[in-house]
Image (cartoon, rainbow, N blue to C red; front, side):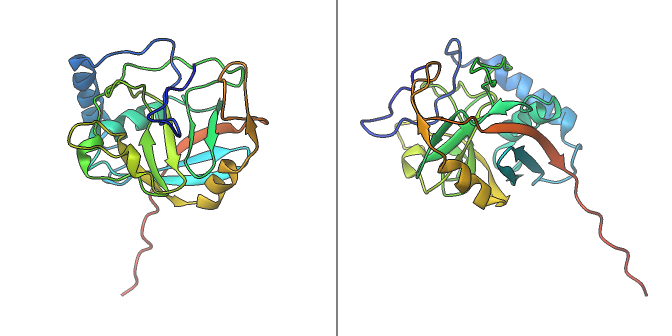
Length: 218
């Protein structure tokens, strides 16, 4: 589970996994199928998900139009209750907080097949945006996600390099994200580094249902 450095400085949002999995076209097909099945769950191109942690809650607005595969992948995990009782297992001040795939005993939570990398969608890794963590191979993202604490242009794609796919942004509770990003961290026997000394637990992730407009009187 040793993070692999991108360069000499901070390692990118590397997904904790038992084995890195290469891209498979079936992953694209699967993602497309469940995108169609669940598109009406929240009838909007910008569904919202509330992440509740033991340090507070924040709300992510998803960009279904620009990151359709990644959004439907994330929503599938939300609907399945996958994120309940997982950790923000990797916290780096002035970089990212990363979670959604590690259980409190620091073992990896089983995930579905990885999906195709949508980092070329035009969404940038700016402060408050949410992206899909992955291994070094580009098409290996599954359940783990991260929130950018600062602008992280080094995670964006280049002409000769895949980036990390942004699929949403925090629209409420960024102060909670900042609070988590500043917890003390250190070496962990399972994760090696950047692990909160006191675990940060994701209690649940749930869709925020749109509020119906109040009827207007004539």
